[in-house]
Image (cartoon, rainbow, N blue to C red):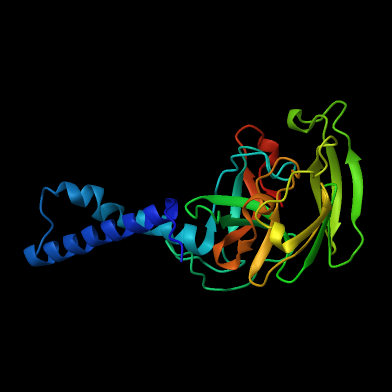
Length: 266
């Protein structure tokens, strides 16, 4: 079992510390029979913050979270600086340190999933789930198909002209449909998925660069970024174990650099 240490773990320890201060203060007031005129420093910085800290911890673990997107690996779906609304009720709350789940549901193909990064579970990553346990996933020039189905892709733009975001210039924007669910991906026309397979190579056959076929092992998922040629994903670090799933990203809450993205569904 891997032990993670992130904001959630810090909030958990803060909840324990402020809760202990709150209990100690309540016992002291009961013993004295009245509230002292001067309160100790640990009451101001501990006991009186307990309810606030506990609510923040409970919200982040059991209901929803709001991480910030740090990179362009999920462009064009997510942009750098997006704050995401992560729904924990979709899959079930995750307990701190161990990420043990109280299961309400399971991730589904096409979900945008927030998870603990397997090589360092103190970090959180966000990618798209493209392969369920047992799926046969085919990857061809940046486009995915599953379980023998034909690749369904539509060219939306070639990254030229007015109104194209700076980070999308010179990139192909494609509408990819996998098992009935559609989303937009970005492919570099000069790369087209030819990055080498690394950690999942033992489960895959690769007749040529940019073309491979993988069988997803039981209890694990194949995760890819929508920015297919600029993403550190399962091709680099391996399949995602189910126990490292953290929550489902459902909306962009806001982006300080682009308020038009506020409350955008994913």
